[in-house]
Image (tube, rainbow, N blue to C red; front, side):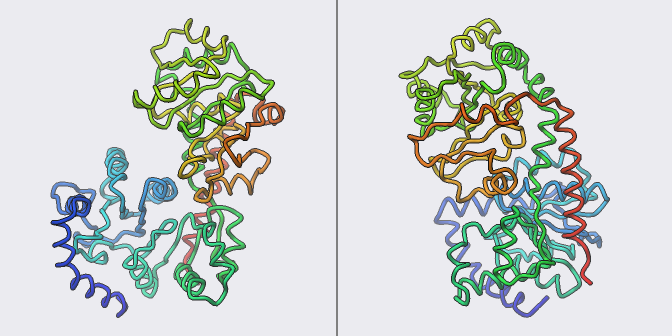
Length: 447
């Protein structure tokens, strides 16, 4: 390991007693501490280091959050299909459930998981046995960067997935400044970089990075399309056959509008749209928060303009049909099937854009819905991906007073008809080819 890495380890040893003291004082630190201590639990073959049994992994991935998991997981699965031993470091406690679920279908002889030790002291190079390290997006913990540099000097590869400089426009305009030089140095550590969209290439080239390092690919599309090609089967498993039947027999796709991940802050857009549009759309709300309090608040907000009907998989078909024919706003109280609903709707408004940040717009876009969202898109690389590939498929609203252009976009080709499963099957196969091309470039050995 390089001297700078050993110095960093020494500093961690020095500050460790102070961290331990603060853990006893602050509950949030104590919770994090206890989370990391699970690394010491015995009996879990999935967290034992390969190196402890004199084995070597081919590749180690680091993911911080669920969003990063979505980017890295397709690459990980392909590694496992090829029989490569793989290690996964994860940071967020929110990933614990995903990791637990994944273990059920995996072979511990090929993959191991470990919680990133930020508070507890454990040298990463004592657990990581792979010579190739793959990071994702922007959580550049110093020890991981130093570890990647160290592996690089030993013939390994240091790769970054889903990279974006979308929020660094001001820094990119100040060449020669400390922030600019620091950013350029940081990304130059990586041998290969997978960009979040085609727009990113110009930004990374401005940092002075070589074009031979860069590749553009959005890995999450593959998992979305996997679910879309099975969307009818999934909805049937969730006993929503009658819901599909009711909307398909009483409306056409171009007359349907779904509010995905809807918040109360988004409802002004809905009410304004219903006031001005000539189209009488069927509106379905899929709330972000399914608590009884949230549903009641949504009902009160909408009632002034249009009557509301709350439904789920147990709602009788006759009642659904009556509500649809009366064009009542449907609030669908079902968890985990929003993505599978999108193919049925010609128009999809995605919530969060008038709050902290817009939710996933890639899901309705790939499901062939016309996409609408609020202006808080600064954190969304998905919006930029759509703007790069098909800008005519997206409308970003500037204010709550803006209405959705349903009448104009009704002629948009993507909202004309519900696509069969075979359509998404074809897209999935094309996306799988793109993944293989990306892997071939990103993991190609250095000359």
